[in-house]
Length: 611
Image (cartoon, rainbow, N blue to C red):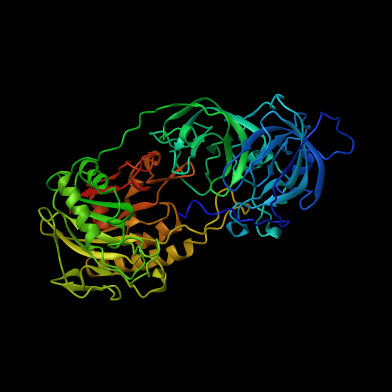
């Protein structure tokens, strides 16, 4: 997933704006000329782009509903207490001051300024724009007025349909379409942009993150997981009840919530639109956190005759991190010390220091020692150091996949010759498939792996039977347009590379199966794509593999939680011999994604089967 925080970029769809310190004029109350004044609903209009964009407006009247005194988006929201009869026109708007505003909630003000359309993150993101008043001159008419009553957002008010299709003549943009707030959820939220809104007794569907925000749903029965989240199960089921919550108050007062918790009572404040999630309730009143009691899961222990294979993204682990004991406890206590563990995002020995270091033996050894200290086995490990700065990820970190294996349960078949640039091949030994090098990387020179992690293939033996394991970390979703993009449906540009990667891995598995039809092949890792995606279909092509997470009920299919959607990014795919036997168990072990104190943003997966 892309980096979460960058400086505010003043990229505008209509007019370039220079931010200045707002001028605040204190005067006695005065009567506005209602016949000539432009009102907020006139500015907002019935589409996403203001009909006044780029124009100067004078003496726009409203009551201050919220004040943001921090960050690069300082300013305040005003709302007209006398709305018009059109549900498509918002009665609220944000006044961008750049410096700390000198107003308070309840102030009656007039604002003279320029109407601007600000695109959070810049136009390249595809995000919708936020209508603002900029370079403002503010006149405070009176204080202590009643704030306009909050509009209630609930399951009845939010439509089930997510968004209209974008206008093909406008490149797929919805910006110029007339809002239909009773038909589409995104139109409904847009019709409330800048207004005071409230939700009540809402369930948390993404835990509090390091940026002091969480997600709730106003539709508790919408694709619910058994643990309180909301499953993202298709590209046409975006879960309309999701809403991001931030706070105008102190970060110290923001609740540390987990999925399944509830914000009891009323959470209210202006409805904003930002780069990281779109429509966001910026609360000046937060509900009380009621813990749902969700616990970290523990998988079943494998029987003596079962092989347990796991995948676990340890999120940029390097020797300087303080999470080794936590990861070790996760592997020992919650994963039950699997026989083979594919680790993703193992960084080199000095982490993000970009000095040419590529070896990761210190990182892996520190984790193995921590596992032993936690009561687990002394794993052995295999991996291949990448070329410096060629595999993407955090600059200088040189992330890669690594195999851990318990030598008391399984052996590794070493065949020399595998390195960063040598491609592993498939041969035949004694009438069965074998790797030419082990460990080895799949076709590292293929353009599919440019600036991305190369798959690591290894040959293992369990109770006399060979098992091939392919560890993957496909290209990230960075650069994709968000679900609330102005372009509908949003473009998923990152898929192009993952499709090439999936095709390459599928082809390699087919080579194995051509040499040995009943070969046991496990292809696993951070696929960075959904079980219903084209990426997954290409991996499964011609029945060479099958994503085992589909053996779970739909309400349990998730390994990651993003913007209120519990979704699949990590997968374990199995060859026909494993699937046909039917004697396998698959478990997505929820120990991270649903929790505010997560040590990784991914949940590990475990497959148990009898080769």
